[in-house]
Amino acid sequence: MSSDTSVLQSRGKDKPNPNAPTVLHLVSRLDGGGGSRLAIDLSSGLVESGGRALIAYDGEATSTYELSRHKITPITEALTSRNPISGYNVTRRLAQVIRDQKVDMVHAQNATLAAVGEAAARKAGAKMITTFCDGPGEVATLSKKTRTALLNSDHVLTLSYLTANLLSEALPELRERVSVVPYGVDLTRFDPQRVTPQRMIQMAQTWRLPDDRPVLMLPARYVPQKGHALLLEALTEMKDIELRCLMVGPSSDGGAYRDQLNKLVTMMGLDDRIFLADECRDMPAALMLADLVVAPYLTPSTYNRVVIEAQALGRPLVASDYPCARELVEGSSMAWLVPPNDAQALAWAIRDALALPSEERQARTTQVVENLQRRSDRDWMRRRVLGMYWDLSGRPGTPF
Image (cartoon, rainbow, N blue to C red; front, top):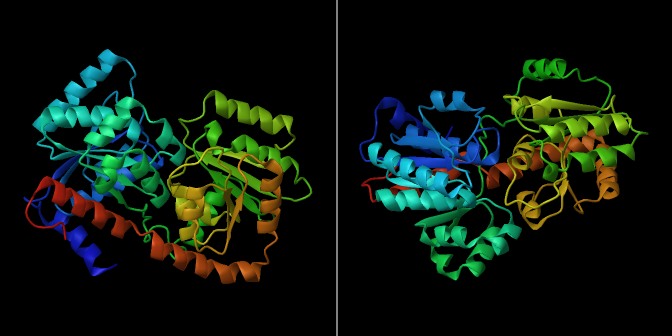
């Protein structure tokens, strides 16, 4: 652990920092998704530096245990309601929370929440930050309300240089208020040297994984755009290869779509090759079990946490070829990018990745891990954003 990180952790544990700001994060869902992970990572860093953090979320939550562990205040609110009357009431209640909790700034973790967050912040006299983590294609289709909220934000963060450039072109007035802070993974948790054999054995037994077959893993929410059905189609062209495919997602997700996937598995004759699993809390051990991580997304996104975590553990990766995906795997020697929505190309890439000799794969693993560590460190990400909190709040001192 670096000395900077030690300082970040010690301040909150010793005593609160009276100069630290209080930040209210807004997330659509408190689950295993990227937005809630980002909010928790930044909030825990703020608490460790002596500040206070709150997270407001909509709907059922699956990660509340982390809020308690990190001393983050939870707030349940209908943030994503499309009813104008409900939206007005949500804004009013959030503004009251901001005043009561002496919140210095609101940080919306996606553009959809920027409008309600900006309205509440303005009403209560707080600063406003928006993370634009939507896909590059979303820039051109921003609603008037969202554009206004972004333009009224004190600062906008993106996780991708490509998206930052597109956003600056679409909204030139924002150019001086846009910062790029690539998503940073917890390198102490996603470290292949720290994942014990016992954890992997326990996970393999839970999922009844055979020892003699390569394991493919698609870790993603059970929604169509993540490409589950496309992967099933690709696997029908690979019945000559013995393998096991795990699709891992939150248990609260899916509904009718997950039922449809189960029917597709049976209809395609893949029952002995596919297992639809619920989300697990030990993703480092889960990913280490994978001989290949697959991300066959049908739509582009600014970033994908699993793509980053897989590289942190040195896993081979097959993903859809979008500009932002190229940014995420830049420098990796074990990443195969394939045309989106092309089952045949996906099947060939999977074959190629699985055919990589074990000696060659082992030699490349170190390069993949070191490349990712240089580019995606959670501690660096937190330092950048926490420094921004201090600057915008006008509080004296620094978080470090």
